[in-house]
Structure formats: structure tokens, C-alpha cells
Amino acid sequence: MAGRVVNAQTRRLGWMLLLVAVVIALVVATRPTSHDETVDQRVQRIAGELRCPTCQGLSVAASPSETARLIRSDIRRMIDEGATDAEIEGAYVERYDEWVLLQPESRGLSALVWWLPAVFILGGAAVLVWRIKSRDVVSAFDERSTDERVRRARDAVRADGVASVAAKNPDHDSGAEIGAIVLGSGQGSTSRRVETGVDDGEDQPS
Amino acid sequence: MTSIQTGRSSRRAWTIAGVAALFVLAILALMVVSLGNDPRADNQRLENKAAPRFLLNTVDGQVVDSAELLGGVVIVNFWNSWCVPCRQEHPDLVKFYDLHASDPDFTMVGIVRDDSESAVREFLVANQTPWIIAFDPDARASLDFGTFGQPETYAIDADGIVRASFFGPASVADLEQMLTKARLGEQS
Image (cartoon, rainbow over all chains, first blue to last red; front, side):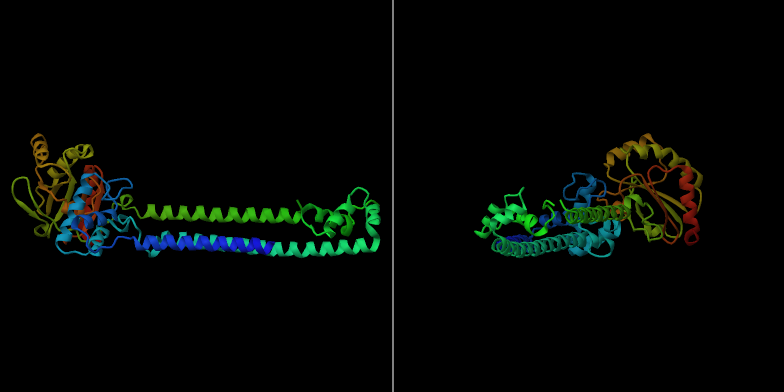
């Protein structure tokens, strides 16, 4: 039973991983490339990667400000002069520092922006796997202990008979419980009550 | 619930709280780092670096080339006619210019940022502005200096190195301090 639960959980985890892989593949596959791009599209793309210096949280592409319009013209001029994307972005980094890049560079302290989410995702996955594994161990332990309880109950029935067990535990309906266990249910609260009543002896009247 | 279960739950709660606290700390650290990187909080970004070269048309039909100004100190002021702090700053600029107009090593250039030529000319008719005023129609100079707005003022030494900068309306005292730094050059 516990094995089936673990299998179902493993299968579900597998599906989740597959789904994540498909989403990543789709994002990568549908990512726009710089081939066959018009000058306007290129200006917009580069402007979209730059922060508008006179705005709050807007890219140069998104801002209607005069400064942003002038920067777009400046980008177009640089494109006309044959500058590469890296050269254009480099010119703006030189003027405004790396702050001007909306997508921070993956080095120095800025690298934290890239690495932290990955660390948290991997950490989360590790915790998930750990939780599933520890549940697996607990389930296996429960299974073993249930078998053990059934075996002990059987021994008790054989040794003393149902009546003597009932006499030992007048407050518990042990006979019926043990009968149920012997008949093969051995699950849930019944098995726990048998363990308390028969084996532990803590609740037994003195 | 047994004491073992209680212990486990409490340990789990502490683990979750610890992870959440780490996450919050990491986000805060990132915010502090990003704020520290905001050049708008640091107007000294260009200081001790070569001033960007500019070649602009002036209001009186001349051309001002920053390369030709090397050998003397240059005060560059980005401004425009509609900006209220620029208007507030204007009387101080006039006073400061009058104090140094006759200094042989002194030049002051006002570069119009983000304004129309007609509005600037109208302003100049109404307000005495004896220093060089140049237009920057495609914002090349404004962008090369990495301006965020106006007024912004830079003091450039004889070797073309920015020695002081000021964001916002500068007083005569601020401008004097900038000029001193530019005159001192490397010693400042």
C-alpha cells in the first residue's frame, strides 16, 4: 500500500519535472532571434533592455519621455553606424553604469539575481525529495509494525483465547478488534488500540 | 500528540522559518546592492574621468568644441527653459559668471537639454545669460555625460578631466567649490 503511494508520488514528481522541461524547451524554442530583424525591431529590442534614466522602473522602449525618445534615436544612429548590440549596450553602461541594464549581468554581486532563484528551486526540490523519502521510510515502518502487531495478536489469541484477552482489558472491546485484525484488516485505529491494550500493558487495570 | 511528534513539528516549523528568514534576507541584500548601484544616488560618477567631448551649435550661430577649450577650466551646465530648478539656479549662475568672466582660464557653457530652440531663445531674451549657450538637439552631449535630468553641472580641469559635479540647482558657493577643484586638478 505504502509502496503504491510512493510510486504515485514519484510518478507525479516525474510528470512535474517533465512539465518543467517542456516549458523550458518552449521558452527556448520560441525565443526571438536577431536574424531577419528590421532596424525598428532591433531598436525596440535594445531599448527594451535599457532602463530609462529619467523614469521610475520603465525601459527606454516603454517610456514616452523625451529622454527615452532621444535614446531610441541614439540607438538607431549607432545601428546605422554599424555598432553591434554589445557595443550599443556597452556605450550606455559606460555612461550610466550597469544600472542602466534591466537584465543585470551574471557576474559580481549582480550574479546573485541569477543564482538565488536557482538555489531556491534546487533547495525546494531537495526538500521535496527528502520529504517523499522520509514518508517512504515511515510508511515502510508502519507496514512492518502492523504485521508485527497482527502476529503478536495472533499469538495472544492462540495462547489465551479471546475471552482471556477480554478479561485482561474489560474497558476495551479487544476481542472484536483482535478478531478483525486476525481476519486481515489490521489497519487504522483498531491496530493501534490492540497494540496499546495487549502489548504495552500501560492501560491495563492493575 | 506524542512528544516525538511535537518535537518533529517544532523542528519543521523552525526549518521553514529559517528558510523563509534566509529568503527575506537574500531579497533585502539584493535590494541594498541594487540601491547601492543606482547612479542617481551618486552624482560623482564622472569625477576623475575624461569629460565626454562635445561639438555643438550655439545660440549665436557659432560652434563650441570642447577639445578647443582644453588648457582652461570649463563649467558645463545642463539646463532648459521649462525646468523650475533651472530657473531657481539662474541668478546664482549669473552671479558666479560675473565673478569669473574676466578670468583668463575660465569658460562656462550652458547646454540645453530636452527643450525647443524657440523656448530657449525666448528665455534668453527675458533673462540675462552672458555665457555660451549651446543646443543639443539629438541629446548626444546629454547622453554622453550620462545626465539624468537638469540642472546638472560639471567642472572640467585644464586636461579635460571632470573634477566636480553637482545635481540640482547649484548655489554660488557650490560653484566656487567646483571651480576650485577644477583649478587644482589632480591635487583635488
